[in-house]
Amino acid sequence: MRRVEDLSLIKVRNLKNVMSQLEDYEFLQLKKMIITKCDELENLVVTTENWIPNNSFSELKYLHLSMLSNLKEIWHGTRLSFGWFENLRQINIRFCQKLKYVFPLSIAKGLRQLKSIEILDCNEMEGVLYGNEERDSNLNEEACFIEELHLYSLPKLVGFLVNKDLSMTNNEVVSTSIERPIGAFDSTNSIDDEQLISLQPTVVSNNQVSHTKIKDAIRLMEKYSAFSSKLMEKQLKSLTKLKIAFCNALQIIFSFKESHAMIGVIKSLRVLELYGLQNLRHIWFQMPPKIMPFRNLQHLVLSECHNILYAFPYQVAKLMVRLKKVQISRCEKMKEIVTEDDDEVDTVKDTIVFYYLKVMELQHMPKLSVFYGGISSIAMPKLEALRLEQCNKMEFFSYSSLSTQMLERIQMNGSSYPLLGDLNTTIKRLKVEKL
Image (cartoon, rainbow, N blue to C red; front, top):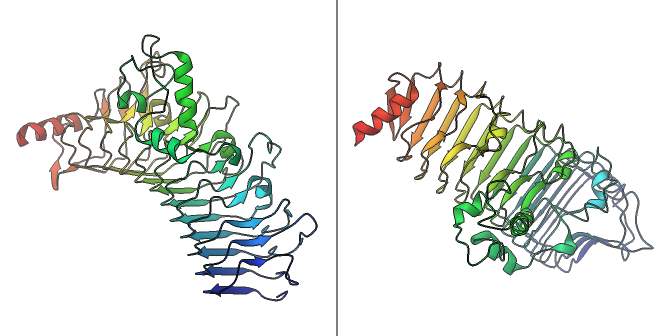
């Protein structure tokens, strides 16, 4: 086994561990490992206090685990060697229904070569990393360099990093994700689901809900945040492509609850794709002013996220200077693409400029009434293609002044129309003619 470079284990019976103290071999040169349909496998590696091989899997670059119905942990033990998996570049996990977590946070600083993670159809998966973020705050900031992260069909996923000591019960996930956080509001106060979805501390008056209950509601929502700002600073600082689909427990993608400065948070992210997140309420939540994240985002896809009311908060929209393509579809409750709160708007009328935006597709959103309903001007100097399909409530693209000098035609409900004056005039005229 010391010389093996490529190992595939397929339909192996009576295999509970690939490597444990009971075996007398180590994988010193292994570069590629595929394990699939080994129904009795429970752990990849089992270590003890007295037995921790230092060099096994140190050369491993690719790990594929699929259809392992009883896999509970990739490695099981009280201590781990930081030399393990130090050259791992890609990990794929599929149909491992009992696996809850992938990496302990304490070993994340050893995964310096890890570039790609894909996890698909793992019904019990709660998080990719597990550990205590405060206890492990001394992690090397140059830990992981993950560039691509794909998370599909993980119904219990509550975040990229999960504290196992504070894991949620199934009842809590159901109660918070479908309607509203339990105990968040007084029973005597009337507040509908859409007010809950857009909940921010500054927009709910004292007459409706107490500040304590607002904080409780936000704290509960943050339990279902995929990424905290600390995590984005360290383990995900090199992320370029993020895809999340059918992870129904998630309510927030990026949470900025920490108050410390985060100048370079996720500055490398180029592509963000979110599909079928039934309980998603915010992509960006409580982002503090004077930070510059996501400035290199080029492509946003948002589809079948029925509980989200808008795509961009005003302050985030102002940062989207390199955005090239926006595709938003089948978000049933979305009312506008860019929104603003009273506390967010500059005292002087500003301009939101999407310098490189060329393609925008907005489809099948029955409540979408406007792209932006605020007072700031909108400029899209390079917009060439605009497609509007079944957004029948939209009568204006923007309530403020709008500049789209490169746009000559728009696609609406399957037909192409020349621009008649400006974009607002064209949409309103086509709406009237259709009626």
